[in-house]
Length: 157
Image (cartoon, rainbow, N blue to C red; front, top):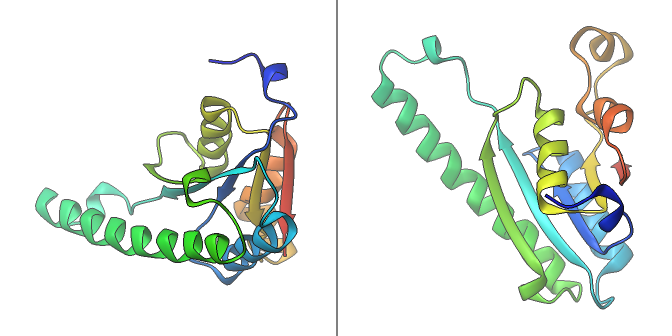
């Protein structure tokens, strides 16, 4: 793993997305802000947050759901990738990454991936929770701002 100061100012962007409209806006924002500029690399990240194991009647149903969901997300990430290519990104500078949630929160997974991949910037769409929902459930963007170290966090609304 890299020392945090080694990648603090590089041009690697971790664009954490889900299926929301705010994620689409985050993709458009990155595309419009830096599309066509040399040296930027973007890694699209989606963290799969499956239902609890007891939600599915059998392990086979769980595996089927996971497979279908992964296909849906791969298609979505490819659409997002095409937006960036259209706006001038080099296709070789774009990567797609899908992980199953492996930490207690999605925000922790995003931070772990940012550290693992050595990205200097994390970009997410704002979740759109009301203030009371945010207090009750927490917010991925709020957790990222509060816990991400040695990187910049862009929250796009």
